[in-house]
Image 1 (cartoon, rainbow, N blue to C red):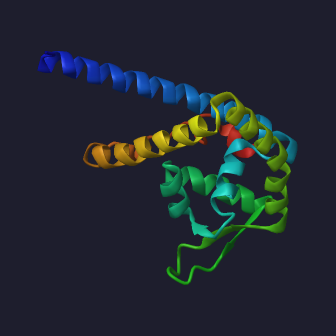
Image 2: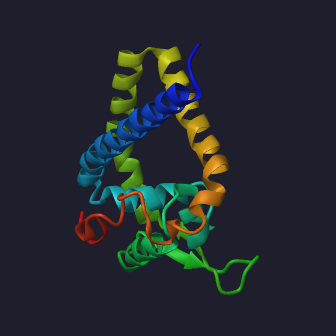
Length: 178
């Protein structure tokens, strides 16, 4: 029968393996996203923010919460998208000062140009993982994100102010240049 110390060590190993795999996946997704976005004249960061508001306009803070990154990171990209006329700020009926970001027709068209490559990558992953395996992978990652939010709420409240996922903060060029 495993001891408490053995179980703790096993749990720590599982957490480390999971984190390292997710970090690797993040890098792989960033690379793939940059390649998919480039022909549309976007960066992965621009695509990420535009993608967050395709269905409905959102305030910058709402986009940041959804993506799990800092509001300041999203604000920089949103302001740049507005300057490039790929997005626009519109009044927010729920909050006078926190305007909503929504894509312009040019922003929607840019994201639409990514769709063929996105569809091809999705099909290749589905072929490699199998339909059920692909769906299960998404479910497990979604569950992990939800559970991690729940179990780390108290721990991360004090430390997440300056921490990002590296997606939009790691390389300033990814924010400003496609």
